[in-house]
Image (tube, rainbow, N blue to C red):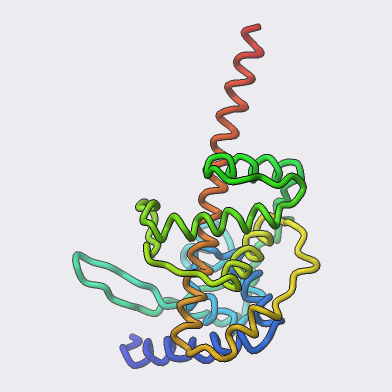
Length: 249
C-alpha cells in the first residue's frame, strides 16, 4: 500500500511539471488540449498522467474498463492518479492505478463535432441568459466573454451549486488559456492561437501562483462545459415545444 511519503512525492512532482508548462508553448498547448477532453480531472492529475503518457484522453481503473468489455493490452503499465476521498469531516488522499483508453483494445470512435451553426446557436443562448452582448460569427470572442462572466459571477458567489472558490481570480492570460481549452472542446477553430503571452506571464511567477492558475483554468473550463450542457438541454426543450405546436396546427 502506498504511504503518505509516496503521495507527497507525487504531489511535489507536479511542481516541476507545472513550471515546465509555462516554459514551453508546446507543452502548454498540449496540456490545454488534454484539459479540453478531461475537464473533470484535476490539473494535478492531468500533469501526473501526461508525465507518463502524452496521449491521454479518458482514464479509468482496470475494473471499470473491463466492466465495459475493454481489455488492457499486454505489457501496458498502470498510470497513477491521486484520489481525494472525504468521509464525514475527514479528507484522505490515496493513489489509484488507472489506464487510458488508448491502453485498451477499445476501437477509437470519431470525435463528435458540432456544426458552426449549432455552436453559434448555443453560444447565443448562453450569452442571452447571462445578459451578454453576442457577436455573430465570432465564437472565440463569445467564449471569452462567457468565461469572464463565469469568473465574475463565481467571485460574487452566484454559483453555489459547483465547488468553485468564490474569491477566484483570473488574470487575462488565464482567461485566454481557458478560452482555448473551451474552444478545443467545442471544435472551434484555434489555428492562429498564440501561447506566447501565457507562457511569458508565468516565467517570473512562483510555483504556488502557477498551480493556482492551473487550478482555476481547469475549474472554469469545467464550469463552461456544464453551462454549455445546460444550454443544450434548454434548446432541446425549446425544439420539442416547437414540434408540439406545429403538430397542433
